[in-house]
Each structure stands twice: as structure tokens, then as C-alpha cells.
Amino acid sequence: MEPFEVSLSLPVVAPLLDVVKELADGLKQTLASKPAVPESDAVFRDLWSQELLSAQNEDVTALLSLFNEEFFTEGVVAFDHTNAEAITRACSAIRLRLRERYLAALGDEALEIGEVELAQLDAQTRKAFMCYLFLATIQELIIQHLDESIIES
Image: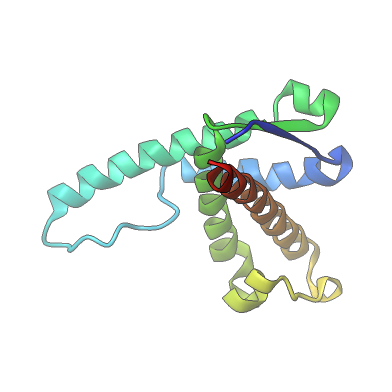
């Protein structure tokens, strides 16, 4: 995957980062999605969950590292082969938490196609939905660049 940069609007993205950081803090201790392991195998479930949690925390750290001092100066984030997969996974984890915490009433289909009446949402739900779309867009950009690099190989 060739490295690429994306310019983002600071006034639009900065408020969404507050939501991302809040949810990222909550993900430090809990998985975005529980592993499907039988209750009878508690030792395996606990070990696997700890490994997954550690990996999730590394992924979320990679995502948050995009929004550093340079981002707030230049409004640019950079993606490359070293961070793309981790950022994509972190976006998924945060989107799952957004869906669970703020967006469950909207339904999965409405979330995935983006057909939501923003004017009918309260301010908190609207901000969560915009964050959901923002993270989806990051994922789509990365996947698009991964597809291009696969096709060019």
C-alpha cells in the first residue's frame, strides 16, 4: 500500500474527536465485541479476551495517534502499510461502541446506508452519528487504497 495523506476540516473533525476519545477510553477495559467462546472454557476465554483487548488497545492508540499536534496544525492525517489495518480495526471497534451506546435506535440498515434524518436527532445522537460516518469514511479510504495496491500488484 502506497502511503497517502488526507486533509480534514479541523472545525468539523475536532468535535468528533471528543466522541472518539471518550469511547476509546471506555474500550481500554472492555472489548467492542465479546468473543464467541463457550462458557465452559473459561480459562481459554479469559486468555483470548486479554489478547484481544491488548490488540484492540494498540489499534485504538494507532487511530488516536493520527490526531496529534501536527494534525491540529496542518489538518492532515497520513496512512501507510504500518498503520492502515490497525486504524481500520480501531474504527470498527469505536463504530460498534457508537452503535451500542448512542445509535441502537436508528437500526443497522439506516446506519449502513446513512439514511438518517439529522434534523430529527437530538444533539448527542447527531454528533454520534456524524462520528460514525467519519470513521466509516476513514475505513473506506483505507480499503480503497488497499484495493488499488492489490490490483496494481
